[in-house]
Every structure is written in structure tokens, then in C-alpha cells.
Length: 400
Ligand SMILES: Cc1cc2nc3c(=O)[nH]c(=O)nc-3n(C[C@H](O)[C@H](O)[C@H](O)COP(=O)(O)OP(=O)(O)OC[C@H]3O[C@@H](n4cnc5c(N)ncnc54)[C@H](O)[C@@H]3O)c2cc1C
Image (cartoon, rainbow, N blue to C red; front, side):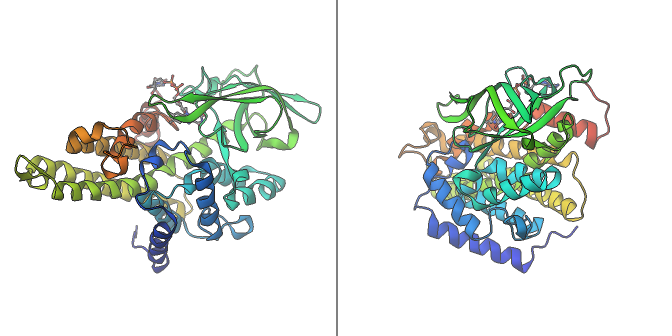
């Protein structure tokens, strides 16, 4: 494996730095990247469109779909830099750019590709998607989902409830998993994937405030929502296999951004330790603090290597199996460890609201501390990810 970055990738890195300096307001609060609540939607969309105009938003997609055919290496570098600079618009339409688009390229019809991929690639509000998998009784036990899609005439009628749907209040389209066969003996059979227009009659989005009082996710109700047959993605009843691919894409996408974001936070923590005194001693002189910051540097380096190793496998034309889960686990761990060390280092300053004038490092430590438990649940809990690693990485038998 050769992880040396090409001239193109290094130039891209520099271009993104210039972009961030030119487009983001001074003192831009990077904690917003972590709580991901789309606070200033207009600003996010404006940035997202600018990223698209530069050919960055979906750079590894083929040109015919709005990408520029860049390598997965360049995309990984882009994601790391987006994380480092806290560039917001890149994550506004994360469902679309990171898993809906790639899945449509693999499983979609020509009509679906022609309709939806350019919308995602444009970075505009019509390219924002949400992902409707989880239900009140189907999270880790995803195959238990009960939302129904019944064939009727030249389309389907959808009824059911989804929950924890990130960005549903912003999304124009929904990537929906629904049951099309209720009599199958195996629960993971009989599931299909649909594209639903969020403006369809019968779709209701209710906000859910997360445990720190912010509006990030929602409940979504489908009440006799009619969709045309052309909304089905892939084969009817065989959506499970498509979903596994979509989840692998989703889990892959966390490592580069998490690496970039927390690399920056670590640099700032080190600077803070060098500039701050406690009891007449510079924090940076304290052996325990030096040990903790160095340990984080090691964790971050491991995460970077994992991200590059996965990029290398994809570049070789291989389909990653457990590695996406491994990278997701390491991303969650890095976030947790930086958050806890940061809280210890900042002391009482770490307990003020991330938006407070008293917050240090742009509120990024509080953002990470409040965000890490949720991060370790989204896209598959830490237990489920470890279960996948045990089974497919270590060859252990299935446990449930
Ligand atoms: C910030 C955030 C954003 C989210 N965004 C979305 C979204 O956009 N779309 C969407 O569809 N969902 C979303 N979710 C929901 C998320 O996918 C689910 O919460 C997650 O899959 C867990 O499901 P659950 O909440 O039903 O918990 P459960 O599955 O009930 O799990 C409860 C606990 O039991 C453990 N557990 C369950 N089964 C096993 C097992 N077999 N072995 C070991 N331990 C097990 C779990 O690890 C967990 O600790 C989001 C969640 C969060 C926190």
C-alpha cells in the first residue's frame, strides 16, 4: 500500500484551505459540524452550491452525473479537509452525496440516475435527502421494519412511521426502506427501497429535540402516500442487499471527516496547553497532559491510516466488508476520547454552552462531548459495528 499523496491531492488540499478562508466567516464555529443540526440552512446551501460549482461536492462521481471522475484518494483528502476547516455545506446533503448517489449508480435505473444524480451534484436544496430506515421497533433489529409499501395499480401505497430521521425537515427526497412482503419466513427478505418526494400528500414530519435541546432529527409519518412504480430502487423484496451496501458507504464516510475535524481540535488543544498556566505552571509542562495529548495524536494517526487503507481497497476495485464498521468504531472512539480529554483540559470553560462567549476553541469540545453518544448510535450502534467486525473481520460465528 502506498499512501503518498499525489501532486493533485496536495493542490486540492491547498485549494480547500483557500476556499475556507475566503468563504467562512471569521471565528466560524466548528462545533456546528458535530451537532449537524443545519442551523443556518441558507448558508449551508450557499456553501454547498459553491462546493458543487468547483466540482468538489461529488468529485469521485463520473462527469456525466456531475462529478469529475476524481480518485477515491482525492475524495478522501477532500473529506479530511472539509472536516479540518469545518466547511458546512458538504454535510447538508450527506445522505445524497455519500450513499444515495453511490447506490443509485450501482442499482438505479437509467431514469433514476438521470433524474436524481444531477440534483444531488448541484448542491442545491432539491438535492437534499433524508434516510428513513429506523422505526420505533426497528433500529439495530433493522429487519423488523413494519412500514408497508403495497402494490396498487401502477405504483405503491406507503403507510408507516419512521423515527430519528436526520434532516427530514430540510429534505426534498427520502430514501425509504419499506416492507413489500409480509409473509416471508426470513425477516430480512421482503424489504424494498423507494425514493419518496417529501412534498407528497400524506408525508408528515414532526421534530424531535435531541437530549441537548437541538432539532437535528424527526419522526416521519407516511399516511397512504402514493409513489409511482418507477420509485422502486433495485429489485422488489431484495432491498436488504442494497441496504447493506448503503450502510457500508455511510460508515465509510465518517472516518476522513472525523479525522480532519479532530486533527484541528487537537492542534488547538495543544496550543491552548502551551498558552495557559495553572498554579504557576504551563499546562503543556504537565506530564499527564502531555501524555493524554500524545495518545490522541496516536489515535488520530490510526484513524487516518484506516481511512487511507479503505480508500486503497476501493481504489484496487475491492469491496470493503468489515472495514467500514472498523472505521466507524474508530471514528466514534476518537470523538469520545478527544471530547473527554478536552473537557479535562478546559476545566470549567468546558461546561458552558458551545455558543457562549466564554466557550473556548469555538465550542468544539462541548460539541464533541454532547455529540459523541449520538454519533456512536447513528448508522449502527457501537455494539452492532463490533458484532460485524467479530463476524466478518475475525470469522467468529453469528451471535444472535
Ligand atoms: C444522531 C443520530 C442520527 C440518526 N439519524 C438517523 C437517520 O437519519 N435515519 C434513520 O433511519 N435512523 C437514524 N438514527 C437512528 C439510529 O440508526 C438508531 O438509533 C440505531 O440504529 C439504534 O437503534 P435503536 O435506537 O432502535 O436502539 P436499539 O436497536 O433498541 O438498541 C438499544 C441498545 O441495545 C443494543 N443492542 C441492540 N441489539 C443488539 C445486538 N443484537 N447485540 C448487541 N447489542 C444490541 C444497542 O447497541 C443499543 O445499545 C439516528 C440516530 C442518532 C443517534
